[in-house]
Structures are given as C-alpha cells and as structure tokens.
Image 1 (cartoon, helix red, strand yellow):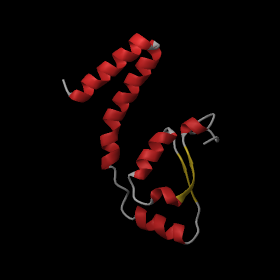
Image 2: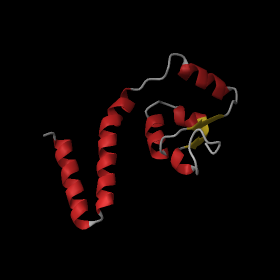
Image 3: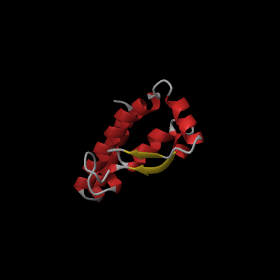
Image 4: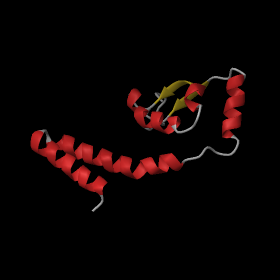
Length: 107
C-alpha cells in the first residue's frame, strides 16, 4: 500500500474516532479527489496561442472574467499553474461563490 493511502486511512480513522463520521467521509472523498486530479492539473497546458491572445487582449484593456463550476480554491490552484494568468482576470467566480452554478445565470 502506498504511503499516501496509509495517510488517508489514518487521518480518516482519527476523524471517525474524534469527530463526526460524515466529516471523515467528506475528508476521504476530498483527499481521493485531489490525489486523482492534482497530477492532471499539473500537466494541463494552455491551447496553442492562448497565452499570446490573453496577453495581447490584456495589454489593450480588454477585461477578463472567469466563471467555473469548480470550487474557487481549485480554480486558484489551476490558474496559479499558468504563469501570469491570475493577473489577467478582474473577476474570478467558482460554484461555491454563487447560489446556483452553471448553466444558471448566477454564474
């Protein structure tokens, strides 16, 4: 068994013994989700020309907003992996910041 899996089992066991079980289950799901998705986020590359286009539009004062069904904290991680992108967006909203996510007009 890999170390990360042992760590997840240990943390979940401690939470179940000391806190409420649903919180331990939520923690388990979150850790599995991050374990599966973080390597994919680290490998993600912008489409060809995207960096150049964003830089050009930003230079000419075109405002950018980002609306995603991802949680805001995940958006921040994803954007931080692309050099300079965070500065391009004047507004960034995740699904946890609005009442209803996409395709609702809230987001």
